[in-house]
Amino acid sequence: MFQLVPIQLSMAAETFLICLLFGAALLAAWFLVRFEEVGPRSVIAATCCWGASGALIAGIPAFIEGIGASGLPEVRVLVIFGLALPIFTYFFLSGAWFMRSVMDIVGGLR
Image 1 (cartoon, rainbow, N blue to C red):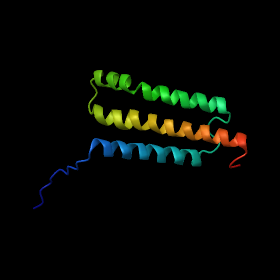
Image 2 (image 1 turned 90 degrees about the vertical axis):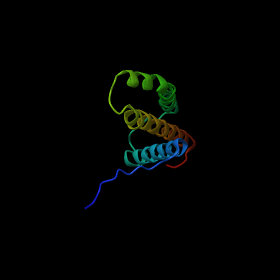
Image 3 (image 1 turned 120 degrees about the vertical axis):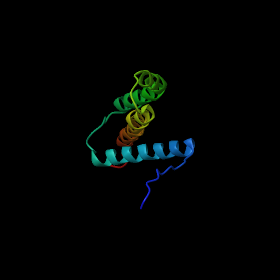
Image 4 (image 1 turned 135 degrees about the vertical axis):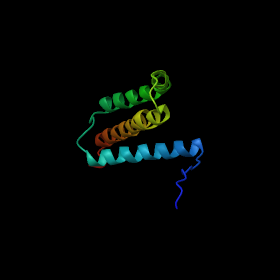
């Protein structure tokens, strides 16, 4: 009959990282359009959000070390989809909030 063979797809780490960042940017764009009323409206608040996202990115190695020391199973999957994807999505979203607040000041899109 049929024999089940596991599918193994190989992908370079750089390619996966590009896909992850592209997916995070798409998620941020969807969130920005879907929940237009959410987010800071002043440049100062948007700058603080963007700075906080930068601090989260800078803290990724420490977060990875903590998750690795916890002994949880499938640490790689947890780090990628539970840590990196949300942090990079927030990074792109806060950048978009910053751009939106700047555009509000100069009388752009609205």
